[in-house]
Length: 260
Image (cartoon, rainbow, N blue to C red; front, side, top):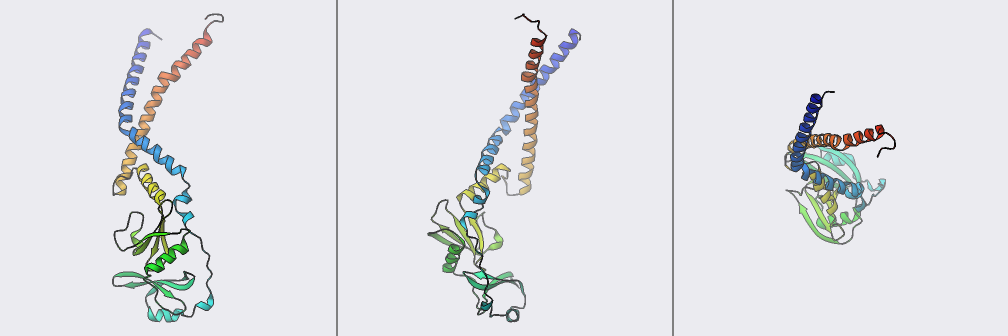
């Protein structure tokens, strides 16, 4: 290899290193903060058991059996009074056999809760019934406050389950149990660690806007530049660390024995 060719090769390598270092520096300046956010949020989501985050430890999995003798209000009678009834379910509410079903009205679908023994309408359930249901479904103790949510639900509750009772408990993690006012069913279980987990997940996937596609595009762009920064870092590692070490190893191998 001629001296001119070696000089040209050295110049190209030096130029590549300079360009890689400059681009790498500016990329890390802009996306370095997101790297820190990814690390912190990822560590939080991995640290906590997902079943605990979902609030599974807050509730009791009841296996109540339906007593056939409690079903004295027949389906034929139910259809005669509610001709448009749909999605009829026979279940229990506070150890009482009940019918749960949906009726299409002019204002939209409406859910009903009926006593399977007498046919008495139990919905909408009262605050005291909601508290009793919250105690029945949960392992929690003292109630701190009760709120009926009819519109503008918090981010942790779906609009589809409204209206719903929110029962806040005076316990570790500020747990809340959500009970449907229409059916008396458990429709949500939340605590502080779940709420923090939700924010961590949003930061992790870069969901900084209201529109989901905005967050996804932002994540794609930052991920692309992050990969580019890693590739540039690998280039610098090769020329500044790996290659010099490799050349030194070859030089030592070719050095005559006894020469220091």
